[in-house]
Image (cartoon, rainbow, N blue to C red; front, side, top):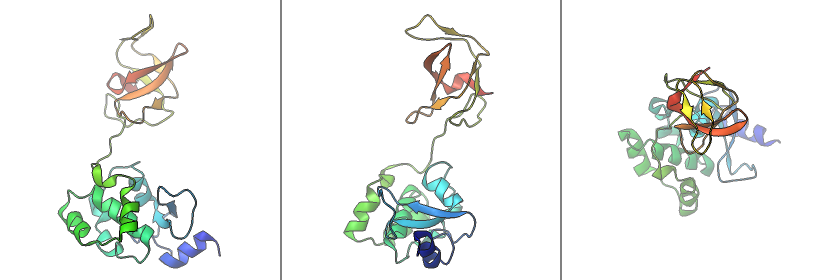
Length: 192
């Protein structure tokens, strides 16, 4: 029986975190490299996007964890603990976190990603108009910029194609202007 078939049977073909039946897929719980029945869960797209911080946390969506956190499967317990930790500012999540018991080995696994030390909000790259930017987008400069360490001056209205988001700084992107890769602050851009 394939791993996916095992998960479908184990989860009754529902998301193991929110019980949804829409757009389900296998999620390997980090930091695992290989997929085994012990380190994967079956999740919906909504849960997956929020777990992987591609979308903002929706506290209402996660209230069902008060039921699903009691799963007999350690991988589900670990992800439930991580999500409750990210939502710990919510009273109900903090209460659930207090009563969710993980043995020492699973608690160590849960803490490996540092979710218990991070804020629940996710910062995205936003342009000067408040529009979210994505990897590969095309942007337009809304201000003439002098490039530090260069004689290059990027003029107002310059189009920058195929941008790259700076992963650890939501206020910066990288793009090529006149063949030179430069870092540009998102407040000087608008999505093109």
